[in-house]
Image 1 (cartoon, rainbow, N blue to C red):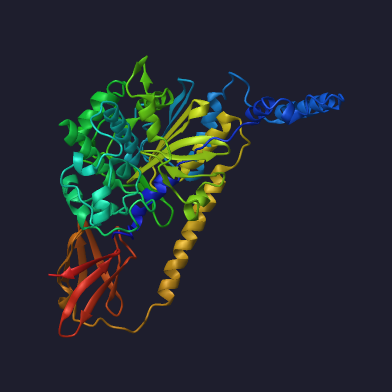
Image 2: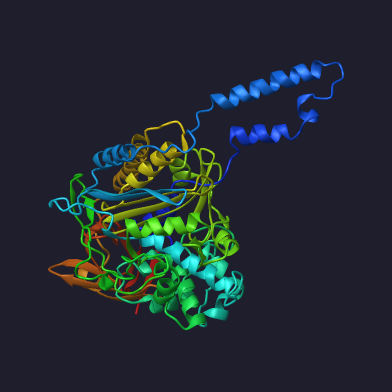
Length: 548
């Protein structure tokens, strides 16, 4: 399971697909820079007088070129109705039941509105106070908290993790000796996602962290980027251990309360019975939108458990666009906050990352933020997704622009499409049909997935039988990091149970079985079996479980 994460691999895509940042000079900035070159650049000082003529011609050409560039009128913002049209189109195209949107510019909330329904089959509308799960958008709260603790000298970005979290250990001795808090927050520890260690797991965060030392590295320490929520759990625990205060209390007292984020909760069980909660949805194989069971997060999780409304997040983006100030009071130094938005780990612009960011020159991860660029505009952003919901928070710092979108449809790309459209709208950039663009990406991805399954099934060996009788596969199998898998038999059919997942198995070929339903449907489970010795191991989702 270390490398193949099933559908939970969406978390990496969540982080990589969140709009884009980095700054490219505007034409006006370029013209201004040319002006500072004086004679060297424009030919001034040519005593023949021709230099003056050429200078005038060139300056006029530059001015004409500048004036030809479509720029937004100073002080004029798009009408709120333009955002309404963007949201209405996006909800219709992506078949999203409901969403909420925030647009902040120059410390003013320009848009704070709900669209559509909290639940598809009921009329109750999404409002600015509807509370959504933020999922991985929680990570920026954890990184900002760490920045505050850096200000206070309680920890340093490059402190060894073990200095603040005794017992934390990596399996690679070199990495274990050198790993820092910065490494945790920038996803460069060498440990891959391993999201199934926490996703719907019956054990808690402390057990997840204990298992990290049993996980083999999937890439060299500081030699790449692989998104890992586990490391944000460790960072949150390090902050709590250093201060003696639980992570959720630190975030509440230092961030959400001072910002007036009254709707925030750190678990779903902490939401009051009267909370304005939406229902999550998903699409069936047939493409029908149906209700998706709620993922109840009962333990505060520094990687992804915060629940918040659009109104709350309006305050959050205003805080970041102001450089860490709220109501004239500075909560975190500009320097420490800026460090969280500095590129720390390069994300290679290839594959899905390239496809979803067509106008991006560079893509990297800071600490709690994806750092990139969109059509010459520096962007800081992060996505979040959990069962039935998708969220995106985007900042365009040089434009003093913040955009937040929350919706209640699983795995939709609506947030990315609508965010790009709104960036273009508010920055005066040429329009593009981002809904059509991302729908093609989704269609191509689905087609590629179907082609892989089809090719696999075409190569399947037919007319084969299992090596053993059904009952000889029954037993318990262990992996050092992922724990126990139990295989049972009933009425001649096998079932595999691991974590909170139950996987009915049907024979595929030889000693390979196919999961016929549930979360891992269509995945393959391979037994290592020989007559006389029986089944000795199982390969499942990239991990090898050995029989006790």
